[in-house]
Image 1 (cartoon, each protein chain N blue to C red):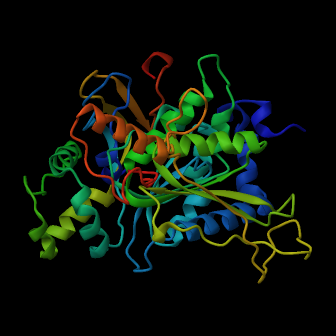
Image 2 (cartoon, chains in turn brown, blue):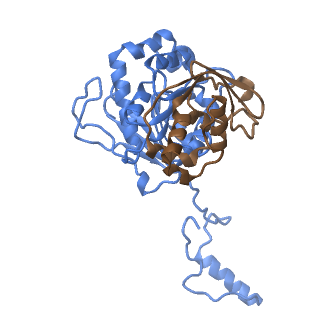
Image 3 (cartoon, rainbow over the protein chains, first blue to last red):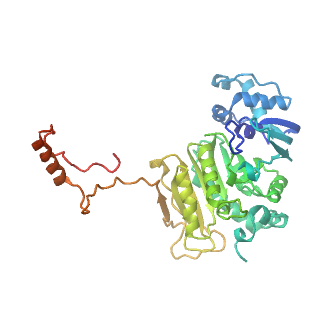
Length: 122
Length: 292
């Protein structure tokens, strides 16, 4: 699971009002190189919750993202490279996503988060 | 052999041996690829070469996702069957896949997705596999969460294998209730084998830009098992709008509507009483537009 996906996921257990962001607990992750596409990055940037991305990247020992970011930084090659790396090249293989409100853990195994809710959570 | 949906819930029907077919059967692979290409085409994404973030609902073995990747897009896939997801892992799909149940809601933030496809999956929502599964609740949760996560104007193209018209209409009803506009495109409507129905839904109100595309089909020409190519196009398109209730006619006890005569009479009565009544004009009791 890449951080792009993590940034979009929100806990939808019944009754949870603020299920975003899911806390990322990573036990194993890998880096997979992917071609940088500036158009995509510029297009997706407005949708990204930046603090959540920074926190998730830190959980994967990547601290090179600026604390805050705005659209003007998208002209910088250096910024784009870091953004690209954090968003698309870091893959979480094993770990868990934790709901910020209930503490419920969604395990990640072989890169696949298990988001299935139990009967009483629907 | 009854249809898959009547045999077992999807996470059980799509077991290891069934999932295996999605790697070994070239026929299945080809058909899935063809349907996925068509669904992507119906998504009508801008032709600007910019990769989009899409959903593949019921991504299964990753075949449909591969079509998305081949076209340069990023995607997030959902599937309920671990066996199918394992096949997707073997294929080393480029999208991120989630083990989840679409009937529980997609759990995505609002407005972040540029488009969604689904190949042969959504009809599974219509079957109650567990006592706690109420198809209507699941359809509502699915379409509600799908509508929420799509960006305004984004489309969802859902290829479905409905058992009958009732099921097809039920699915459409819940899509409309969630706020989608759109309709059904049926390719090859006259061939029972090749026939494919696509729900083409747009997030937001209907407009000129969201008119339904032409369906593929042929008049009289024979279709082979697999989708043949054809130049003739038959329009087989049904358009559904959210039901806007028409303004009710005011009706008196005798069943006659309160028309212009009645209004004029009433005004005259009021004048005789001595009330202040606006003068009668050509606008008095004129019929107003249905949505006022």
